[in-house]
Length: 135
Image (cartoon, rainbow, N blue to C red):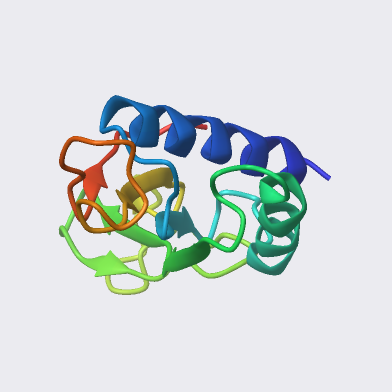
């Protein structure tokens, strides 16, 4: 179950964000998870709950935004849903030269910290900090 290691990496990143801003807790973490990423959202949520026990993320909400798979035809530029299992030929012109343009994402979008003074060790904590992707 690789969702456990993904959850651990998400928690570590969110903890780093909280520390950088002097926050002693995290309210929420928002992720974008692509349909083709191989991540099972329910397993990730369960793993997140397990990994956050006893940390500054205990009780934090994990918000998972599902990203549907999209492909683009190189010949006619049509964007289409390739489905699962993948069908990468264009439904419009039949061309097989397509590229996946969405659906493989696995990234932290933002980390929401409590308002300044609510659970902080001083300093001001932003409502959310944008994060880069990881996988």
